[in-house]
Length: 297
Image 1: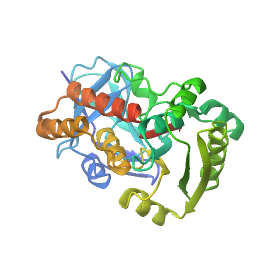
Image 2: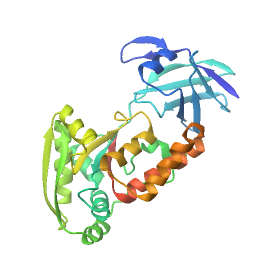
Image 3: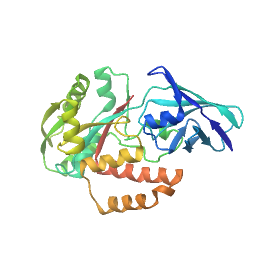
């Protein structure tokens, strides 16, 4: 076992160096959190009062450690030399999944899924001249590179979308986002693509400032389709996925049973079980069309 001692964190956003303990407190990081080590897959990180990061069975080398549970832009670059290595940090570009929530009270599952499979993400990003990557999952694609999750996400298919739309009645709806030129441009492109389907009626947009938007969508769940992103909105992938269920007001016996199972064993959950539950929640989200992933940066 190799124990990595991370004594301090260099925060380039504020140009200060603080103890790992204080960094954990400042960023509201859970003290037992899943991390992702590029090239090695998932392990657990334990932060104690001395600011130690304990990682088992890591051979010598240089690794980037992604603290998956953290609502922060920080990653830790670790140079493993021996069993007691001091680590310093650099800032890795933050990862953000951008997409839309679809409320279950206004559309059935076929219509929701059709909205997701019926758009061409790469065409949208090309038209907008955005240097982002299209994304087909509700979680960053870096997780899939080492087989951390099995569900590879939405498959774009206009024919499948037409079939799904055909199994429902035509609908008008409102797309809600906060005040932002970028969000307005994205919404315009997506609405244009949805307009190619006969089952999609009139789509209107509702634009509000951030405070009103978050209250309506996050607290009141007062929307039909609404902008939603990660990682800034959550510090834990499992919590983020459950927020999707909560904010779309999705209910089912299968979901309730899964939540009860997770809550019963959460304190004793190992990394393998954690990833398994993420897979189950994530697959349910995609199958039910609760979240429409668009891009990541």
